[in-house]
Length: 308
Image (cartoon, rainbow, N blue to C red; front, side):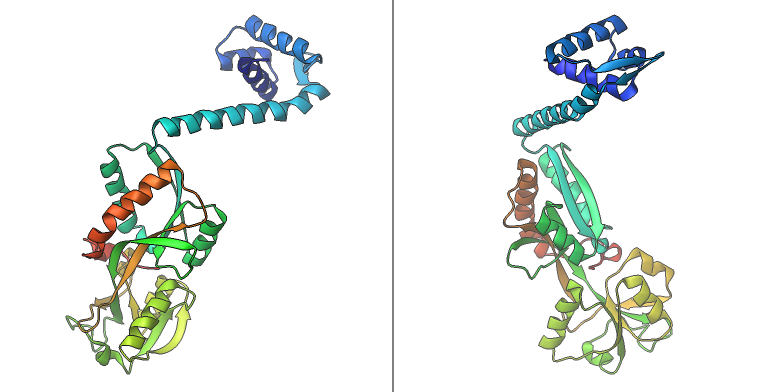
């Protein structure tokens, strides 16, 4: 039994037509018939039967088909693995990311990685979502790496890859709207609209407030920033948020803080208990080289970025 015979069998089983299968395989119909006949003789059972002008799988052929497909699939995986070993940076990486990094941090990180590598042999499958769900995928192996906020799970290793600035968001008619900057003292009496307490950034902001002895008056929470922006526009309260492209559709003013460092770290995450393929290892090693440089400066275009 040869690999060629298995391929011929699987293609013919899919189309159930000798002439069409031969065309797909770029061989003559007699050559196909001969190869299938040899395979049937070796197996000792008929794989196909004629039904008028058509052909159909016999019960033996139908039983054999999934095994033949699985064998071809495993061989294909073996070939891909050999390619990885020949070119360690080649491969496919499942990379998760929170929505807010998709406008600057993510494309900048990938572009710099490719420039560092000198090729685009590594392919990424991108998966966007909320931080909590993405962490679960990282732990169960659905994701190889994740770009998100700093985790609070010991088994998740992280490397800081970017800093992002947060701003005070107020409606255009607010008393502070024309200010070049604000302090926490300026907003002590304001009502705040906050991102959900389940978000990583909520905990990060809580730590900043605690250090500054500031207790914001949070009137309600929302799961995403478009809802927060809409509420701020109506005058329901103010918010602390990053710059996002979607905010351009709202009549808001984003004002930087002058008294406290309103930035957060965006990190590349991996699960410590999972091994890394050569491709994943190359990305992780690249992040290690970049982390110090990223930490010493903010992203070059903060207007297009934000934490989740």
